[in-house]
Amino acid sequence: WIEKLLKEAGNEVDKEDSGLVEYQADGRQTPETYIGYGRMSNFESGKVTPDALASYELAKDLGTNQWGFGGQWNIQAERSVAGTDAVLEMQFKAKNVYLVMNPGTASSGKVKVYIDGKMVKEITVDQDQLYTLAELEKNMEGRLRLEFEPGVEVYAFTFG
Image: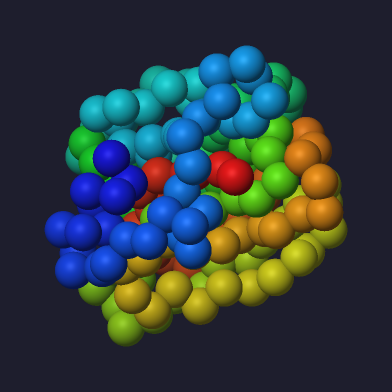
């Protein structure tokens, strides 16, 4: 699905360079995770208000592969659009973390990336593509926190 989305946006997909890998069903890695209500799973921020800007609260505790929103989000079928104070948290298990994003109607938007409470990078989202959020030394379980500028669109996570 992520490959299809990237190709529709006019991007070439090279699996070896992109980090796209098949989910390992033995539980060693978090599966692809879709951020639109059409294929959403493991969402832990209450009831979704589809196709409208709404406020969400982060869950206090997240189990492995669970995720949720804080702040304002417009959750649509294939994506979610960040609003005011938009935050996404996920308890993941992987070595590498990737997210398909685009800047929406703006020319660019910023996303701050935290792993287990430590800021690891700030990303400038300036085109529709798969962004690398984290490249860790080994497969691990951790808490990902993303803080978004309003307007940034998020589609799906993949893990390597």
